[in-house]
Image (cartoon, rainbow, N blue to C red; front, side):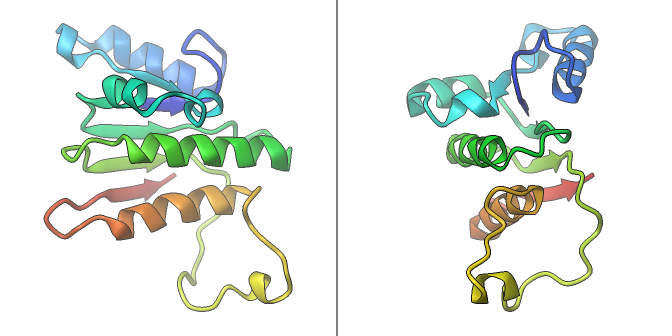
Length: 147
């Protein structure tokens, strides 16, 4: 599954990846599915479930050039909705990000002590995904790679 912004015919990284995967697929069951981060939050869960039912790997491609906190927040809401529909066999997720490596994760969120939030940031997108991965059971793990 490719989870991106806009449609698969667009010019973003997710759309380009989708087209490459579609061209490489030799069987109908290998065709990638597309989920738009900006639409996913408003989609009925049955529709999202139907799109993602065959997915075993998801590549999340938010618009890394976007600095609008409201749009990033909308992408985060779409990511949350998509993750709720990830089927059990989906075990790997790759997130395209613009955030550099973070040496310290976990512990106390110092920003929250001062009323600051990372909700409308790319760090917030990463945190949403890694938090969902931690909630998965040991028998059904979700491996996350942030690129």
